[in-house]
Image (cartoon, rainbow, N blue to C red; front, side, top):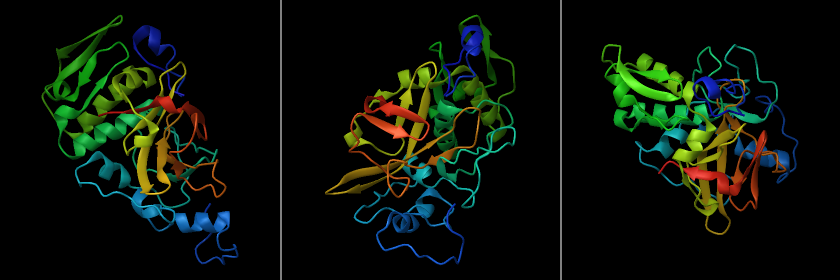
Length: 288
């Protein structure tokens, strides 16, 4: 549950964020049973979302251009099957609400929580394809923090609830600089600012990169990292999150499915019940 963070007032509430079977083991599950369905979905040898998770029978993944956000998310690197998600301080997330852990550093500070993880993935994507001018996030007070300004050596100056840029560093565009920029975003943006900066989306049209976001106090956000479709049964999707305290991004289970596979159906009515948060379906939003 991530708070909407900003400056003296908002900083005080910033603490509100929001085993597979062993290799070679004998499978005694009956064909078509929930356990068998789960085994068919999860490929423990896969090291990306697209290679770790198969789609259920009758569904297909739509192909994406290699430079698209959808391709980037679907090919996020995963830690080995069975890995435990870590908090920023190295402790383990023992509530096993996830099926996989994204192999991406989160730093050593309690910064990259819920909405922050969504913004991190968005920023990492644009940085990876060198679209630096597209890296931009709205802070809780409405100030737009463009990475293009950070590249010039400008740094954020905060006075009360007002913000402006000041030239205080050399021009640079290293990955280390980008990560420092993202940490500042994490400090001063959150679920409220993310929700306000995105466009409403109807669940029938759900797509990779969409976000369920509750911009409240506390708030939370999860991002759609894969989608598959059936002509007769509609779409299914997977979601990822970070949470409080800051922790590695992970692919969530679907406890509403009897086989606990991570695919959710877009035919859900009323709300999305993820393991640690429930979102009204009208809280689905898109960057585009």
